[in-house]
Length: 78
Image (cartoon, rainbow, N blue to C red):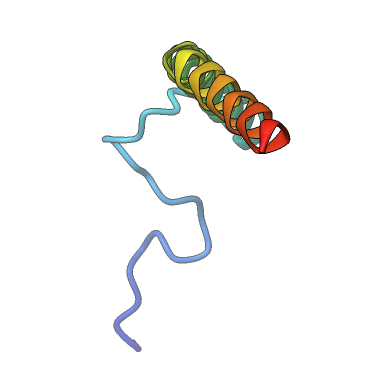
């Protein structure tokens, strides 16, 4: 007479659940695997971007080193 529902004390029925009878642990493993795959993909993309940026920076670094060497030689001649 307290107004409780008939399902109190039992398991809840979730018709829109995506588990379809799988356990919490298996769902957690699946989610972890998906996240790990996503992180690996993001790491691969970041590595590719870093490699591309490094390749773009190499000529600049070589120029700066040559310029510094040239300036050092000029100072030595004085």
